Length: 395
Image (cartoon, rainbow, N blue to C red; front, side, top):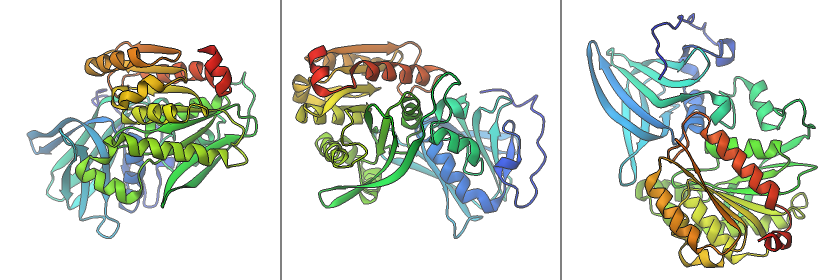
């Protein structure tokens, strides 16, 4: 974490000021009327980041939570000043929720380069609850949408793919929320397509995550810039997600997740704007296993697969039926998952490659590691996301 000792204090925002009214660096205080929206967007951006929670009362300090994955921070809109909830992943599954009663002040910490460091919430009794990330990171390097809706200009530029370098031709990317019918359910998704798209990548998120995963959103943005359409979708319904938060069971139902992916793949074939595009899968964690199982079943439809910090071992016997060129990316510090990927790698008969990113943990939080993942994925899709027939010939 960057030190706060030399940070210049920011002026207290006047009533009604938004985040956009402040400099994009340093600390800012969030007005109470904006807490609900702030925490909603903060949670979407930082889901899965390793966070620690410290309680400070006068000179006394104690750790409430150390380095657990952040699930989210929420504030009930009916009792916005009465309680705020911090939820983190519990060891062994499920969520651990820490309530903050009678909050009076919320301060968002950014360092002098704009990197997100965390949040401090002061209660009426003077207790300060501080949420700090293990590694502060600038939003444009890890998030799919920079900062908060108040800063709409930058967010929209990222969403529409206008953040290309000056040497690249600009192609307008149309972004839309879609509802994908699969059986009796409808799954939510975000579909981004340009007129000149040369393929589409379907993202299968990891355990306990969703289509709002900031890491997948970042990789999707890089692929959009490279000329690919993307579909980020929820693999579970809202009700199923609620059940999964309590039981952590559905996130490991690889067969269910794979069927959902196959359903989305066939849905894309029925849409006029995507029907002719070759399809690739990008899977993270348990989503990678689902992508491999799905690809093994609809081999004629899938041109290429990329796994980020995946659990391909959970694909089981389906691994021997994968004929789509497959790239497995694992963090160099994620020792257990490296071994699981090596065993799965040996069982895949397709054109394949195992990339180990030095210094990266399971979530690729370290500076520069996610950018490297995105580059590897782009290069793989550049080679193999053509037609399935051509991909098999290359293998």
